[in-house]
Length: 255
Image (cartoon, rainbow, N blue to C red):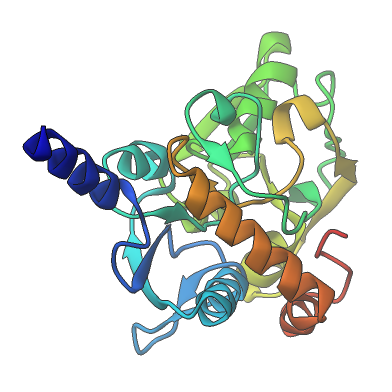
């Protein structure tokens, strides 16, 4: 009986993110300004600052584990890290596999194309056009659900930088991503000359979800509760808004 109890305790400790003093965040560091690498190799971006602030509030050390975006959920389930912190929207589809904390922020989703292309973000305009998206992101699900049935060709890429590279080279006609990522990683750079946002920001809560949140395993409810407490505290004292102002010219942190 004592051996069974000891075994149960060890299993509980192994499943707890607080058995140690380190919180492991899973990220894909190729989505500026949310997460990216400096020339030195150091990680930077809004989500990195956000994670560090959460760790400080919880009095834990941060450890960053890099992974492809489309493999973040499987890697979380395989316990390669404790929390997904990579601009991932909390969607109904993802919630079938993992849990999410309270929503932290939301960035507009926009389509980018050449300024003279006359392309608009609707099925009729995109018929026969090639639309680039990052593989595994909500933008892929949106394009496949809304535009592909009418003839748009949805082209997936392992990273967002690859999307922009092919857009500049003319291998795709448009790209769908967060507004800020398009501005910082493409439109403000030489390769983005002649390109612009086309049409309004896109909204669809069923596909895009409630907003960006931390992803956790369903069994890690204690971790989820502590993360929610930290998020609420950082919002209440203005820390998150202060961090966001370093990267965004508009309000991104949700109430």
